Amino acid sequence: MQENVTMGADSLLTVKEAARRLKVSTATVYSLCESGRLAYLRISTHAIRIADGDLDRFLRNCAGHR
Image (cartoon, rainbow, N blue to C red; front, side):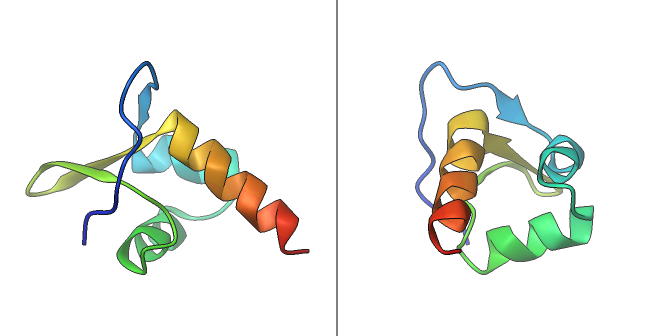
């Protein structure tokens, strides 16, 4: 399921890059995307990207729930 992705000047991160920034596994990033908690962009049948701004927004939302 593709979520609304903030487009614009944001760079697009690979799942591996997003996982590194979140300090989680790539499987966790895929799970967050699949559940709708993290917005993503499907660029092919086998690849997704996460906008830098969407990852930052996800981190802010997580910090706000603590």
